[in-house]
Each structure stands twice: as C-alpha cells, then as structure tokens.
Amino acid sequence: MKKKITIEGMSCGQCAGRIIESLKGLVGVSAVDVNLDAKFAVLDGYDVDDADIKFALGRAGYKVYGIEQFNM
Ligand SMILES: [Cu+2]
Image 1: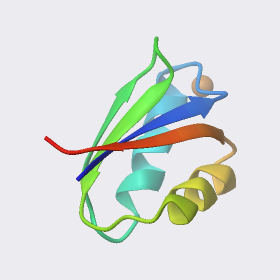
Image 2 (image 1 turned 180 degrees about the horizontal axis):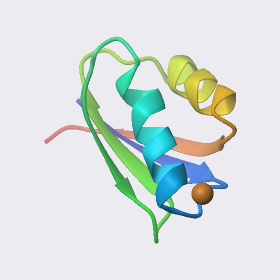
Image 3 (image 1 turned 45 degrees about the vertical axis):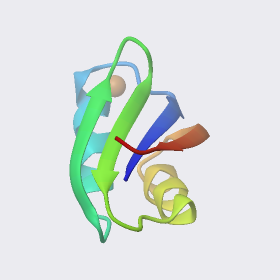
Image 4 (image 1 turned 120 degrees about the horizontal axis):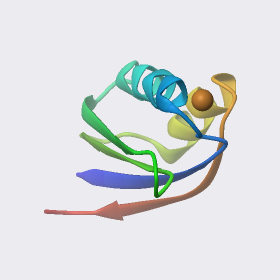
C-alpha cells in the first residue's frame, strides 16, 4: 500500500528530514519518499492509518492537505 500525502509548510531540506523521521516512526511504515518541490510525501507500508499520519505530522509542525491511497 502506498499513500501520497500533500503537506503544507514543507519548505526546505530540514523540513523534509523532519517529515521523513516522523512518518518512519509510525507502525507499519516501510519507506518514505519526499518531493520537496511538489510538497508531497509518498509513504510505503502496511495498514497505516490516515489519522496517525495527520497526528505525527501535526506534532512535527506540518498540516496535511490530503491523503491519497494507491496500489502498485
Ligand atoms: Cu524547512
């Protein structure tokens, strides 16, 4: 399962690093990729809850615009 997470407030490499660390801390997450220019992250994992993603990023200081799930 992959989820594309659109994030507000991600503006530099430090933000990207914080976001990657926050998402990797969630249960079920196996990989995280961040696209800084397009302001989204892609998370790879199993059974990761949207609410947990929003909570983890909110705690790190970022707002989630949207989460889109796709399979590939
Ligand atoms: Cu930053």
